[in-house]
Length: 247
Image 1: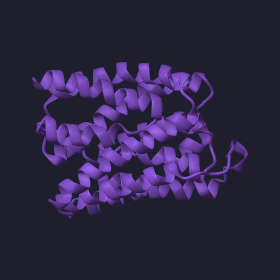
Image 2 (image 1 turned 90 degrees about the horizontal axis):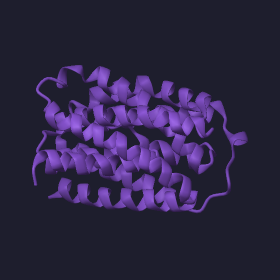
Image 3 (image 1 turned 60 degrees about the vertical axis):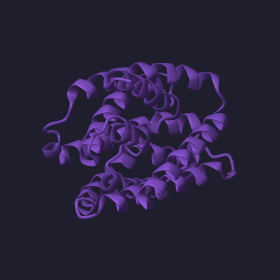
Image 4 (image 1 turned 90 degrees about the vertical axis):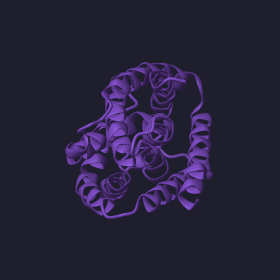
């Protein structure tokens, strides 16, 4: 299969995940770029941030029109993570690739397990600024180290820690992903040289189109079904990446 067709298919799947689940784009994009499209790990994480930032920013308005974006919570969540993301980026440059892959797998699996746990019904009234800032800072640090948008952690944090309803967590996470990805890209400007834009551009275009279909899917599927789907996708990817790190 040619690189162009792979990029289009993978982009459509990743866009579907971002549009429907509010996350999962980076956690899927990075393995595809490395193992199927033969990017180096550094190039893959940079390209993934480009793809996910464009896709998230494009999908955000539709969720906002439906009233599923908590702007104050999302902005505070993202702002709290900028400093830790910068520190995480500096640490990542000193870690071996296998360590980064293993850490990625462990964090993704932990997020999936948390999503599968029963929890009391939350609501917007339970959100506290201190909790938002703390969760945002933790996510920013992980984003900086792993080089991903962070939606696969933002949705569980917004849902389980901050008490947002699932559809609000999905919509608000797109705001967080967009801002975190752009901030991470600013720190990675030097790694953009030599990226294969002939692959990245169609990848991003297919992801944008897939995100629209994902948004329609989210309107038809229950929040609990989205939650379970998201969790099982994370577990599958985490298992594959952990095996790769240990082999």
